[in-house]
Image (cartoon, rainbow, N blue to C red; front, top):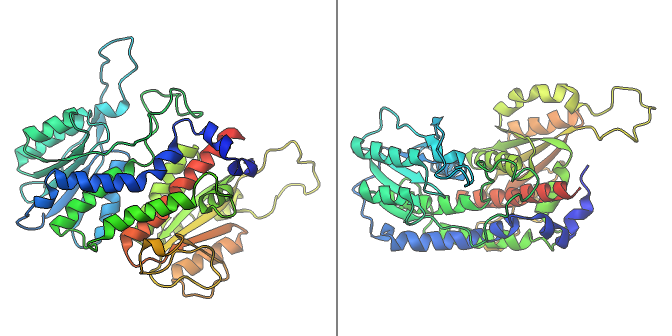
Length: 429
């Protein structure tokens, strides 16, 4: 059981945050600005494309692949976006037996689709730049005649390969926070070849990717959408800072609600769906908690059995009068519904983020009351009825920003902080 008082103890949170995840998330806005500036310095602002590519393939792993999925959500039907996950893995020998084992990701392998060719663009993104499979993928794409863009740390093997295959090199912006301590939070140091990922690396992958696709006409963002996204991430960092009390910090409040539950992360629309998928990955990585993500309306049928089983029971089917003092608290479902609803926030909602006037004009996603009289889709209304029928708590957050990128940043920033807070508090309980 999570001790909620730990969330209101900044000193305890700081002691538990061995790899400084909260500081890394607080620097997300700065990384977006730096990535945009360095991308322009690398030649992106001088790029004069002859036309849009037939398809944009985004290769990487972890948050680099998540960035490709988010690009697909933002582009919609305007273009073909194909994230390329790794297809195989091979061992990488250590240069010295005394050194730590090589990262598992160094031996990952990728394969271009058979149809990829001169009409397509391959974007390779890596926070490390040492993956042999990504170097081989760049060479394979060059042989096929694909246009290539590589985001990787300068002087890394992947950055060197980018120059060899005449790719446009874009620098990866690392975190300004010092590297994690060995054997940090519980579970994070147990597998040295599978280290925890920098929680804010997503924005170092996504910012140059969106700047590139905006230049190519694949996405239709406002001219100032990316700089304003950085401002929004800064505002979220202030609102979700460790010394903010739980009743004013939406990320701490969300973490407390998810403690001791099996979360079902439901989303309506592609933008909210990308945020839900990201949240499920962060809960696993930062908090060590399983979660199921799904898009409405199909999530209702896919997860229906969770409600009719033991997790969805509102009452204990066993003897009501037995002594439960020595028993662990039972797990129950918790539905978190994420939505992107451009327009005005509903009356009576919690601290909110509505309005097309810019990211700085509000306080982030709105927690929508269950009895809100505002319009809901049939799928969202059915989700509320399903949860109520089985005594399952449903919490709904909606971003009311007009810009899809700002709505995405709204939801991702909140849930990233919540995942880190949940992991830190659970580690101290």
